[in-house]
Image 1 (tube, rainbow, N blue to C red):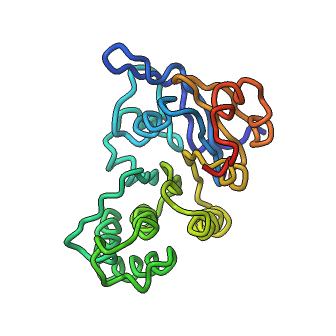
Image 2 (image 1 turned 180 degrees about the vertical axis):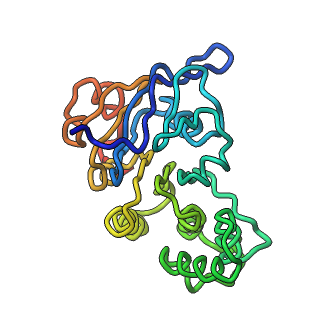
Length: 247
């Protein structure tokens, strides 16, 4: 019996003023799977997330979420259907508290306000921002802003969570609690995760499979062990990494 597909990206291509950013990118993701996406700078990773999440429409190909074709659908419609993303650049509403930022995201689900406030506080606590709940979001350090970005996404109750370098800017001690939380999202909530990451230790720890992009194309896919030993991946990406594979 064929595995159930939650997300199907089929033959996606995207040009920007003649520059090919994505070319025939295709892969499938099963419910509850964690897919790591790696590749050198400019490989097309964030463009791929932009296409999947509806921020930009592809020139070719399609994106099917569940059994619905969401190619080119508005981001808020895709998010409401259950596929939510985070961003590398965190832009919380500075005039609002941490809790208010998360509560605003929760309102996307169109539930009674009292219920949403309670759920927002639960999410704030879950990501470890309880002590900061009523403080302005602008007072958060980098690690706190990363957690807030994640909390805003979680408040929308995603089935699929697209994480764009959620660990960037964090020191190793700050990464571990975030990695524990991401693992718990899959184990406890059944959330499917796609995450772009340069920190190979995190990719090795979390991923069921890894997809490698290079120059807008899928270079390789497989287990973390398989792709990190692939000569093509070593030449295109891993060979450029510093000897410390943490950064």
